[in-house]
Length: 135
Image (cartoon, rainbow, N blue to C red; front, side):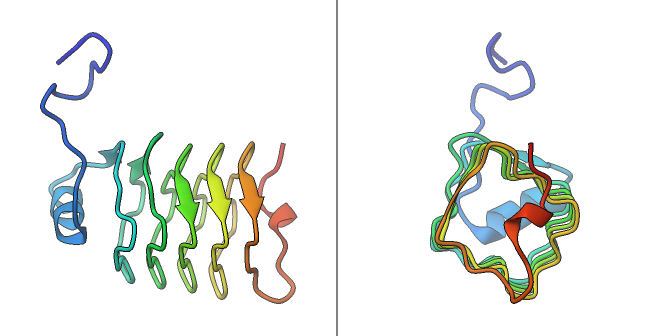
């Protein structure tokens, strides 16, 4: 381990596929910095409490029907991602770059989005981003 990453071995590498992510999650790993799962089908995945960090990319990822309770997308790029019917209860999108995501039917109770940037997001009828926790 290095002084700059006291909780990560020097040879850490982010998961490169859904299968690898699920395997590592099932083994108890929860922190996945610098993950790039753009264009990945993550529909129905269960990643409650996972933490994706700065430099993680989920461009065009499909999280439809996923369980993402308490999952952190802090400082991530989530552009054109589909969160339809996902459970985002208490998920964190603080300082994230969010563009053209779908949240139709998603549970967004307690979502934190302080400092996030939004552009072209499709929301369910009657839902508005201000219902998320704002500064």
